[in-house]
Length: 76
Length: 438
Image (cartoon, one colour):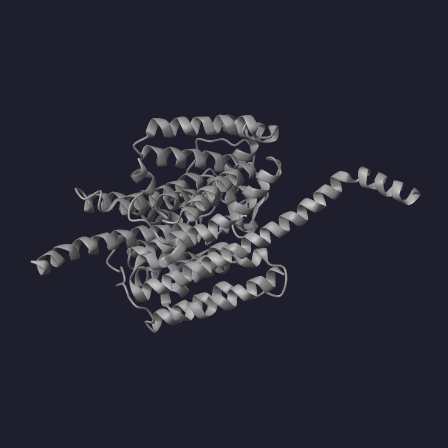
């Protein structure tokens, strides 16, 4: 009980530091996740470009394909 | 873990690079802008990813491993100006002040950048490749702003962005982040996938947040000036300007007090010691240029203590400004114009300005090319305006930071030339096709 109480006191005392540590861990994970997504995106772009180079069809760019016209302007 | 992930990514990218010269070129460009080693902390950090892909790309281009090949642009003004800039840099490095370790280091960087730019016309042919180049810059440069923008959002505006090792301190970083915003906004209009459009829009907002997080006054001024330019190019000017005004008001209302206080000092530049130290650096840089008008002092010679001591107290081209002190310790040039002026002399700054102005005029030349066929080449007009906005942001942001040797601006200048050539070729081919059809 004593141990638990003191732990709780310590957690309360250092709550800001603990929250900051958790946030740093989360930030690092998010940074790693975004880096992974960026690498995946450049792989997908490269694959798309390779496909278009062979087929000469712009839609083969996949996710990174482009529109012939300004999409926002055409909506209006 | 990150290193393992990147190893897998690297192993996936390598065969792709060997399959096509343009793919290799694209990855070369991406790896230069993202500077992935700054995000890795393990065994992959020492791997020179950029050099590997640069070598692969050059080999593939040399062996002509591509389905199409463009002609070199050695007749164009952009090419000639870039060549002159390279020659001028070489002269400055050879004849600059001795004992300058920055000289060779920066020269090596500049040569790599110009090599990347010089081969661009050989591989960037066709709209899909021009579009891929825009996506590549957004993926590479926009990534940095996305990371810091998210941290800014997560901390409720408390996160202070200190800069990035590749670009420099918070002021340099802010200007570099502004450069990517017009390109991200272009993607929100021309990417056919809704997911990509939304991602680009979110990344643009995150980049704006990261610019605010840098607490850079120069970055904020550049952001506002670039937004105004982009809006003046649209038909909904009033709506756009109202949105900017609302955005600025919202920013001031929500930003932390330290940010508001910092931005409030923009009006007091003449009393601000931080600004006056920049003026002092401009005076010393221009004094170096006046003393060496043809050769300059060598790359970043103003940052060498012995050179600083020789010229400190000189007013150079700004004799009408009295900063009120003489610093004993060296400083960076704090302006792209004075940076190039001090480094390469008066001839260097003339070439540099001609390069930037020529790049800005590419948009006008393209508009004249497509006169009467605006709806057919809507994308090209929009992209050339976007590239002009990037150059404008660089010219405005560069007033107070030394980022003259950054790859993004040279890439954008050459891309505007490649775009113009692409449209000129398309127009030239069209009557021939019509004749064939008859």
